[in-house]
Length: 414
Ligand code: HEM
Image 1 (cartoon, rainbow, N blue to C red):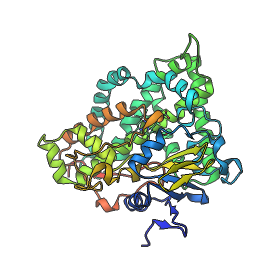
Image 2: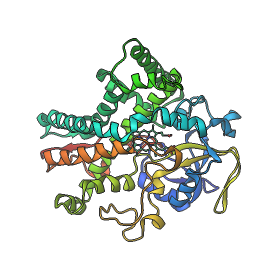
Image 3: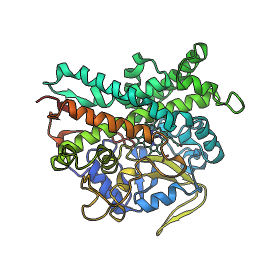
């Protein structure tokens, strides 16, 4: 099989939308760093930052902004219509991910309650309860191969974020199917536009329903946010729901799958957990570093020339933050063991898989809590859990953005 990671003639790294070899791609990107040219499907090119220190510097550099008005290729019509990766950079940014400066700070403030320590702490008993119910529901099929991603890793974060925002339980499956297409890098332009519009319509309907019949949920609170002054517009509530419901499940699903996979692939490390020598916190943190749930975050745009080492992101060019490659940084995480080793006793380095700077993930505490509760409960109930296929057969969903397995087939009670 040819190596899926290719270099163009000018050393541009061609990103593989099918993600046939994520690990090799991360290494290639990291080796080409700290800044390298990358090519996306459709011939769209950008810079990628792939080293830890350079990423921290760029993520706090106010000359790099989310506003697509600063992207020359977009403004001059060089981006194909319906290009699937545009999903994360809508032309009219009305959400946290797409705004900058004062506008961004205002949205962070108006949506802060959802992410506060108190909101997250209040969810603790419910996360326990939901995990227990999901484990019970898997019991009848425990001796047959079962997709742990569909039955468990997806269910928990979707239920948590869905209940928090008052999403109708009957719609969780619909949203899952829509977001699979939304995050795909191979969805065709027409289908992509259909998905995009359907999701907008979905949230518009949800907002109308909550206005007619307010609930005890954060969507209702967002609609009332700032009753005493500043308030979110309906478009901003829709933007917030779009980002938060998507980010609130997809990445945590990947964290849960990544942790299960890593533990099963590294029995020596798993033994340390079973013997109580390392904590489940360490499992969550090392999984976030070893196998970051977000591979590449697109895009930021340069409002002026920004130099990084010998390279320059010219005014009007785009930057992608390659969290997957950044996690391979020897300068940050050390040489022994190197960053490609899953090591729960790792003492050197701190991952930035939740981002860094003004856009740092506000949902990190919730994601961590879900991991720290769900993983020990899963292995306590099913201590002999094993993969139902060889690890090498686990395939990634075709997404350049998220690091998501298609399935995680396991035997709960072999
Ligand atoms: C393991 C799980 C998660 C990972 C790895 C993750 C990762 C990230 C990263 C890397 C960013 C920064 C994006 C950037 O640089 O522009 C981000 C932003 C964000 N995340 Fe998370 N996330 C996770 C879970 C969550 C959860 C559970 C929620 C919601 C409850 C959430 C909501 C958000 C939101 C709203 C933003 C946008 C913040 C902004 O732009 O100001 N995330 N996340």
